[in-house]
Length: 209
Image: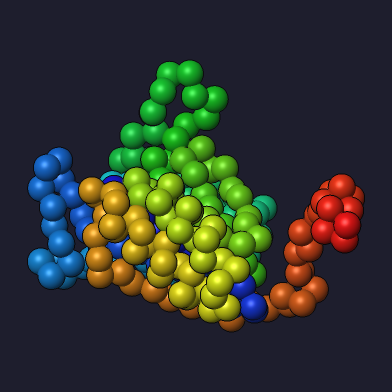
């Protein structure tokens, strides 16, 4: 699988990914793989893709043939992935079935997105999430989330936090490995969107007691 992380802090967003590809028990490391970057660029968006190794080529092809996709809000991302789903099925032979009890067809794709509007995740049923701080996907995501939770208040640069997350995934997940690739983007209108952590009044009482 993989470890991919996104982070938002101090007016910038960063996305990072490991570079290992696996086929069953076979490992294809970056120094053997001429196309080891799991992050692709579409306009001003960086998209880290998790799942089948075929996803990267398929999405590159879809994005080349669909120039007007919008990825700058939850609703735009949802509509864009809804729009490309029939293309994935009809032109790229996607198998949309995961579980017979699933409510919707699956895109079989999990991805993280970083662009000037923020950081997002897209899951296989086209669920879209926007994040205030950080997130991670892939088989190493739990290690990455724990590492970034500890690093977030210690580092000012989101690239450093994303690096810590992917390095933790590569350290402990058997299907992730270094080197990593990393990209940063400047956020726009971040002052207007700044998130304030809600604190329960009881916590304030304890803090001032």
